[in-house]
Length: 147
Ligand code: DQA
Image 1 (cartoon, rainbow, N blue to C red):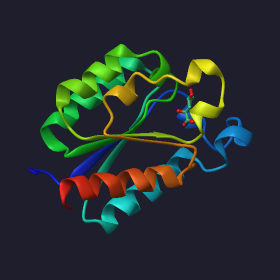
Image 2: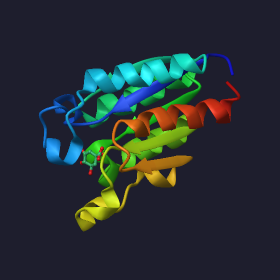
Image 3: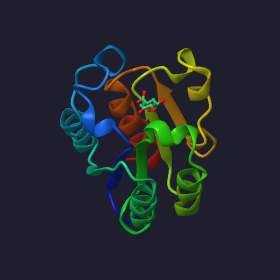
């Protein structure tokens, strides 16, 4: 591993966490999720770069950028999970280990949320664990990377 850094990617509408449908997504804000994920990374000797965007192409660009300076990717693609071949292809193209996180259990929700294009590329998928899922994703990647 050249860099001991993870990329954390959060997709559309996750900037509103804390106030967005708290009955579904809880009351933890995005800033708090980024902080707890960075802390989990620090605990296993990794650093973290956190990005959030509501724009598909920006997310594709951020995933590409990870190719040169990150060792793994934690991603909650949000609604793009269910629609974006471009994000799945970007993850496929960079060849880094990928942990896919969903705060809610997408399989217990509307049928259109049951399929994620990203899951076919992800090395692990966690759904329904809330913010804890991000910590678990970091621990999984650390183990994968021998960190
Ligand atoms: C989500 C689930 C998606 O279906 C939804 O579009 C999101 C968030 C989750 O974290 O549970 O925005 O990825």
